[in-house]
Length: 350
Image (cartoon, rainbow, N blue to C red):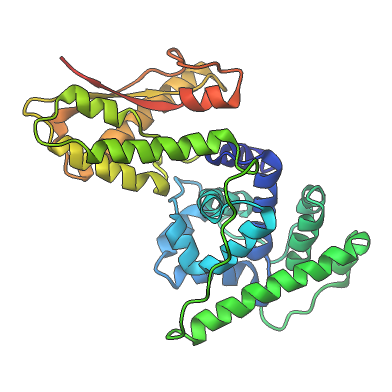
């Protein structure tokens, strides 16, 4: 049901698939938590922050607008996400980024005719059952119909959760902590910020792929910052090719977490020597249909060029081209290799 969302998050953020699935399960639990208004209350929290158009795009059939980790934290609260990170044994930054990437697609998957169901759909029971204790927490949060004053249905209470009663108690504690934080955030605006939970140091819980992506982004930012007066076009593309540009699943929508590095790239390109022209080449892995991959690579390369122009780069400095899956730089039989093949490649046009 959510396999594509889980696979995408696992690949992009270096999560083990079970961790990505558990994170998605907890997000679903927040969506259907009756004490915070159920799905209607959950979406209203985003609308009240001026994200109404964004929420509507998640519910519709068109392109889904991405939400940045900072926007998500602004609605849910950094400490709430920190609590989830601690429960999953993951760095808080990884959880924030992955949750922000998952949420639009998860809402869209759950919606029907532009609306979220009022209570946890029966079709999710089996899927969430595979999450163990975290699945119980999610199901407990979702067994109440949304809306103030609506009583929990007995059928949901009996929905196979008896064997998981110890986990329900844990779920209640998690939800109570989340609601307490949200209440304090609304009512104690001038109170000192709560001390965030200690971040988990990178360990085996964060695979090499996730660390490699982070290192590439950091290296690209550092290389772009070091381009001093007199740098050449070749120096520029070497720095640009350290970037990892993320997109929403099967789309050319640039993810929110790539906006900052693209802004840095635009600043550098604008300082390039006169007459510099750069090709932005889009490449994919070999997953799926080759013709579809070709079109996707073209659309993504064009999207990057468009965004750079929006950031002030002269349109005459850029051209875009899609190469599909035909020019791999790594083994498509491994996730790490496929991640390397999904890339934007910058070259100087002579």
